[in-house]
Length: 295
Picture: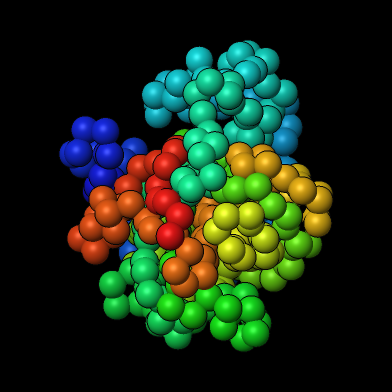
C-alpha cells in the first residue's frame, strides 16, 4: 500500500497502482527477479510493448483503463473515442484551464503531474533513493564538472504513474541546452522497485540537460525511463528561448521520473513538501502548481 500526501485535504490518499500484483511478484519472488534480470529490464521488452501501444489495436485498452483508475477525461483536449492508439491517449494534451501556470516570477512551479519528494542541502555523494539506498549525482549523469555546480543545492524527484498526465514542462522562462542521453535498463520506478534495486536511477535509461532559467539559476533536468516506457520524447528546441510552463517533452507508455537539481540558495521549497519527504511520504502535485519561491 502506497500512501501519498494530499495538499488540499491534508490527508493521505492510497495510490492506485497499475499492475500492482505483477510488480510485487516480479520484485519479491525469486522467479520474478530472474525474469526481471533476463528479460523485463531489457530495452527489447519495453520497445516491443511500446510498439504495441502505438497500434490501433491497443486503443481498445483505453476505456477500461480510464474507468479502473477514474481518470478525468474532461481535462483532455481529445475525447476518449478520438485516440488512434493507447500511446496517443497516454501522451494526451490537457486543456490549459485544468493546468494553470503560476506566472509570478518569484514562484517556483512543478514541472509536471506526479508525486514529489524534495531534499535540501544535498550531499552529492549520498542522494537518497529510499531510506538506506543512495547514489551520487556524478554516477547519475556521468559528469563531475556539472554535478559540482549543484553542491548543497536542492533535489526534486517527481514520480509519474501510468495514470498521470505524462508531459513535463519548464519551470521558468529561459533557454535549455541540448540533451545528453545515457543508455540503460528499464526497471520500474515504483516504490516497490526503488526499495529493491540499488542505484536504480543510475541503472535506467536517462536523459539530462541544463536549463538556464531567468529567475532560479541553472537547473539540471533529468528524465528517467522505466519498464514499458517506449520513448522519452524531447519536444523543445535547444538553445531557444522558452516561456514558463512551455512543454519540454513527454514519456510514452509507462511510469517515469523527472529529477531536478537546483543550485544552492536559489529556491525555498514549500515546507509541507519538505516535511512529508522527511516523514517518508511523497506529495501529490500537478503541473504549474506552486511548490516553492525565489530566495
